[in-house]
Image 1 (cartoon, rainbow over the protein chains, first blue to last red):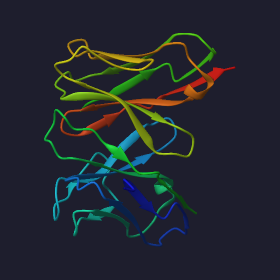
Image 2: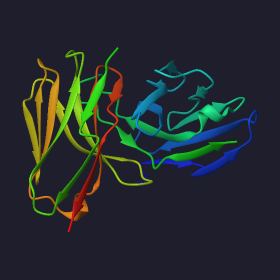
Image 3: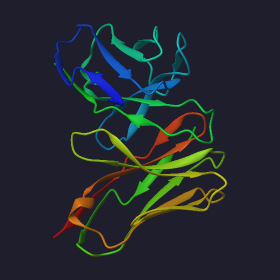
Image 4: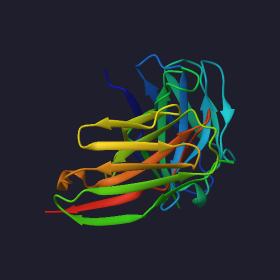
Length: 115
Length: 109
């Protein structure tokens, strides 16, 4: 049982390049999330999904796209990377108990540097 | 929009001290509040989850309280140890999760 895994662990991009971050969970969770963590700002929600085939915008969605074609995978795409997207990206999943019982499980993070 | 604040931003204490970390939030309509631990270069590990109807939760040397009406939560760590050194984050769930910026704790041997 690996929990939540993220690929890659670290990446350097040039401005304008594109890339996809992969998140996978083996806990059969319904909900999945992408966050970014910047110094002094805590975690901010980029996009989330409440089930296979669904996605929704979070607090800071601009410049990112997501897809949830399979229940266990949640992809985060950067179509044209910008230096402002330099950050640590965390994926999380939760069972999908609609509120009260919800607790999140986090992946180890992906460090992205955009030059 | 929910705003979550954690005070202090950093804390350094000698081993053995009891300490309190604070978390405040602006909208009391939450389902639950969760405390996480984050080690350098790592993901977040859940420590305690308090439902909106609960006043406190305990796990070992950790005790978290919740006063939903005043928008406050505290994490109490008893008899701190160097292994407790990490960043502690709180997050409130009102169908989305909102995180504070964390308290970086250093416990000196």
